[in-house]
Length: 199
Length: 199
Image 1 (cartoon, one colour):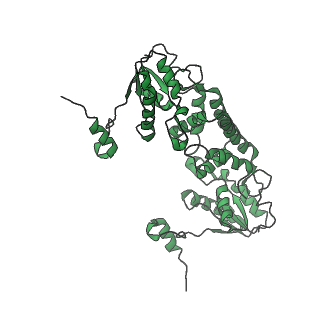
Image 2 (cartoon, chains in turn purple, green):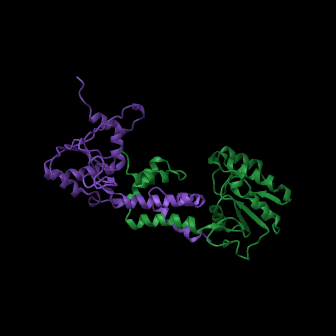
Image 3 (tube, each protein chain N blue to C red):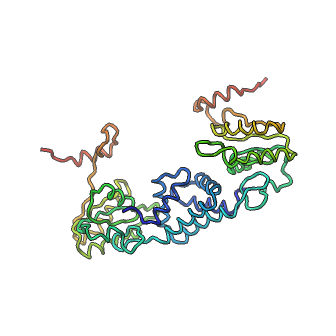
């Protein structure tokens, strides 16, 4: 017989979300059916509102509810060093850490041809234009140290080469607080290759 | 600075869903922000519609879009044996297997005091009333073989005792198609305790 039509429709919509398979979608849908009416409506409204009320910052392309995000609108932030990140969560991580007083550029993703994420989806042309507009001395590529992040860094470097801008990337090595015995080969290799003189 | 207000609101709503922590909620929210406008609206609408358009079947309490679900409305189904299940997905599993031609009773959950699921949430009084209304000869408790399912079975048996109805539960043992070497202690113990004469 199958689920009622509207339940099946909800399961299909939930299944489209990343990391949600058929079984998770069914579990979530049944949870939603058991919610008090106002809570289900609040969830639906939050989805709609977030999508409708947010846009991309005109400067850094982060999600924002204004024309320009809080960081780009802050005259105290240094504009000479631009940290290029994949995701708004990466901006949050750097802001929590308080280690970067400059500005950001948010790609909203990393290259992933099998997922259909191509250079045009990351607004690389807009980043090149931002660099060409002047005032930036260095781009620090702060992309995830994985296949997609590394591929994205290569494509970015190539696209930005004609601008003559200085491009760096985050250091790789053993993470502070870890135990060397639990680190994998790639981490140890990066740490050895990037070793620094002490004396 | 944090996420824009509407994004934070969405993350908070998503976090309330079962199995979705803060990090998953942020990941889902950012996915939703990147969706084409119509897809985000479709998801929001599906949640609202499923909650608004479904109700509980007057007989078996399964979710349905009519007064009576398809199974309860089917005069061909035997009404003497009632399979008591936790969840609409359990009904689907039995229907796919095609091993039960009788009817169901759906509790929409199992007792779980730490999650706030108490006997009154499972409509046990309504099940007792259904049994008292007559026509049912046997209740088969088809609850999950876990702590919550076992506790629910005990409470159900106690509540139904005054009706004098015959109550059984599904057999436990080694699952067809498994390898004994990979089965855990509880499964093997059930299988041994429930052993059946062959000759």
